[in-house]
Length: 127
Image (tube, rainbow, N blue to C red; front, side, top):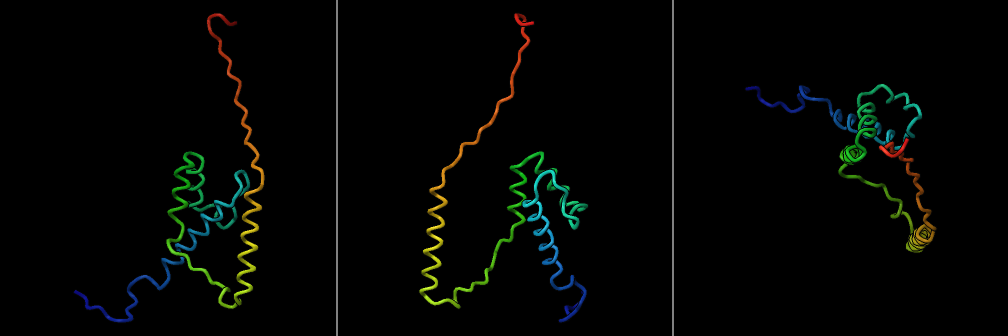
């Protein structure tokens, strides 16, 4: 059995998996933001991942959502500029966010109007 040697470069390069994960995440994000019918972004247009997401979205939107969620990072870190702000600035920011949230809640919700297709039956009594 080979003995482990520190610094041995026999494994994958550092960050290789992370780069692949970042690429897959970027592709999935581009797919989610992409309008159906528009051409795919050039960097993802001919990838198997893009094709698989297209097929899944068409055939099973529920599975598409499940796949996208599974590709999201499990842990996200945010760089915050709050530590550079004083208490009054943070209070003003929170007040503004609350006001925006209340404005959105007050917006009227327009009903979604769906038109049912006409159904015609040609039974024994009809021509």
